[in-house]
Image (spheres, rainbow, N blue to C red):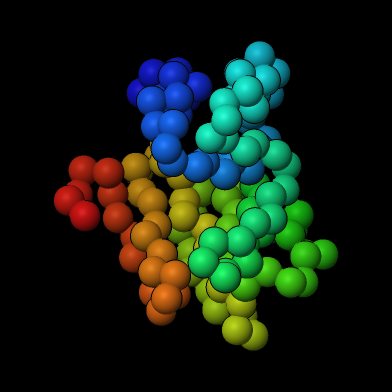
Length: 121
């Protein structure tokens, strides 16, 4: 796969939001990631895209105090999951490393599709 810093640096016009995971312990790599102008890497991230409020953290428990988001994204369990709880969308896309899976989210309809990297979009 290569060095994550090199991969993300190849896409300067794309913004990457990365929630630091429990195995992300290499401080040198984290420092290099944070120096990229197109990458935001923190324990918990909150941001807005097309009027939708997002909250991202490695563990869903870390998001429990965030009330104003509409879309919550977490990982940790490596088990893909989509839940709608009281009108809030909770996503766990699984693990990129285990099966190459990821989610496509339609921000207008909030429809979620799970894809694999070896599939055509």
